[in-house]
Image (cartoon, rainbow, N blue to C red; front, side, top):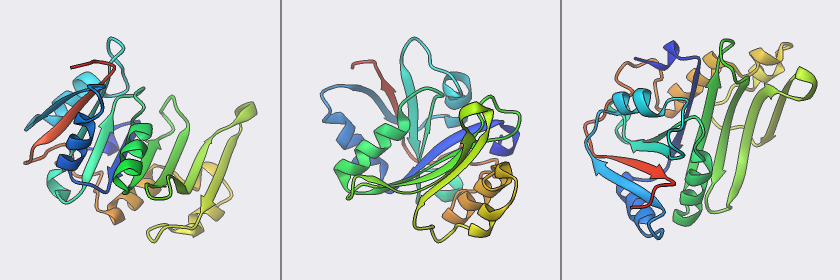
Length: 201
């Protein structure tokens, strides 16, 4: 399966190896239940996590995709505070992360965005977002200096939905190193970190 088949998809690329993240989370007073092993990411994600939250427990996976094993990707369920957790990790380990949310016209959520968080500065330093605002009107906002992979000509288009859509975000992700059209995106040949929030060890 690849992201082209999905109406909605969110992920984070965090600039850190999984073992360092595991060591950090293990020091957080048992706030997280952690499993560190090889696992079937696609099965876990689509059966237990995709757009859902079960029994009040938020779930997420940190893993190195087979096609881009040098990158650490984070997938979370539809309601977990995964962006906030990644920002907290980034602040404590002094690293960056990029969060991308993709929704097409068939999604219940009309929001596409890309956000760069700087862990040293402890704040978002770049944000581009198209979303449904007040009075059911689409809004487009951007703040910070454009990133090297952005095409700012897109943001000049008359139709707001065309300024940051699914195809543009897939293009950006590919430039960063993540091909969202690759059927092997949810596969990994390394140990992965499965985390549950709201469930103590």
